Image (cartoon, rainbow, N blue to C red; front, side, top):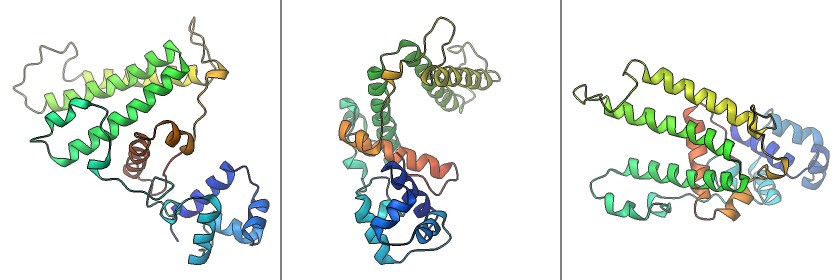
Length: 235
């Protein structure tokens, strides 16, 4: 099979709240055999691949890590919705890759900020916005600094300092966001209320964000591939 299959069928079983024994019974195989499949010790045949895909209501492509969408659906650049209505006006001379990545990032940010709006927590929004702003800042400075003749007067941080300072800001903002989102106060800033903690799953994201969820799933898949993980889809 491949590296994705054992991990994905394990996640799907746990997501359904099934014990290995119970899932094995319903799949009409022994628990030992299912354990071997989930650990990647043995490879299943095509018949079982189709059977377990039907059992969990997903596609074979999803089980094999070939698609981040549970239906196995793939998307083209033209099929990705654009959250920026003016974008079509600016695509004339732009190559395909920037358009694709802009859509994936923009649509994913739409989901992130909708979730933040539901959380209704100023501190968490500030910290995560700071983290993302630092990413945009560093990205722009890389492009700006590509030409050494570009004047640096618009920046307060020197070319030698900006990267370290922006990285430090990101690390601090990330730490603050994690603390606030997992129940720890930050001085006078209270942590996110437990009843505001977002309940998320691929199904919930697909239902709540029918236009943008595919972008987020694909962004996660592509990012984790670049991280050297030949596995994840997400959830």
